[in-house]
Length: 339
Image (cartoon, rainbow, N blue to C red; front, side, top):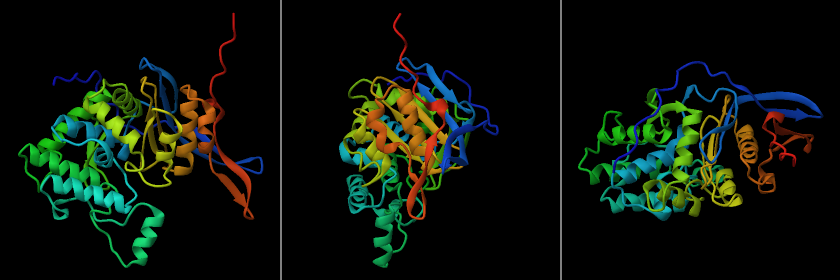
């Protein structure tokens, strides 16, 4: 298959010029401000709204996993459904996640010992607490990226590539992933570093991340992009976990693909190509969710579908005395008046 070449140079590496995106309002007073950046793309790919710095290089963290999954499908990985969703997951470490990662390894004739991700405790708080109570320690399978790593190993084996060094940026697998990142974001990678799990991490722009998500959700049926989108939407809890906001968001908005990432990153896109991407400068989850919901409303999603993502309450004496609220600049535009 022939893919398009990058249409833009790499984004500049600079200190991002973030702007206020959310206020912490306690008792009618702005107690704190979260800075960040937001971009909203229309169905035609044009920027309909932007706030902060959407063109500086940044690391999408796990929000890039759907793109990595597309790259593996392009390289021949024969996954769909639940296991493909898990390959693009930042999972909670529930038993179904561990069983799925084991199944991917088994299908590839591999074992947990082949994984090279960093051992960790389960990401989900309740799962982690139960894990600790049972006296279990960190493991590579429990680490939230184990589905991705199992899929990476199988992809490498299918292509006859070496396994021990599959995380090396110069490995054929990682070069293929970098090529797909550039193809879908429409820009060259600005920098390569190592993500928390040990896999290479590619710096692009927030605009580029939104564009990649839009290209995945609007792709023709049966393509690697569409297969990833279908798998994640149909099996949202495999891509995240029980009670996770990103799964709830995909259930609440028909056709939505959403993926979060550490350090306050969120991307979401609809089948018609509308997409949003959010980066919270201080990495705060309490701002990530309401800002992403506000951006989706700005993109034309019915605000009634997003009410549960409006922002957590601030407590005083055990009762609500304030809230986290996206800045007014993110309020949906009023409909145009009739002529």
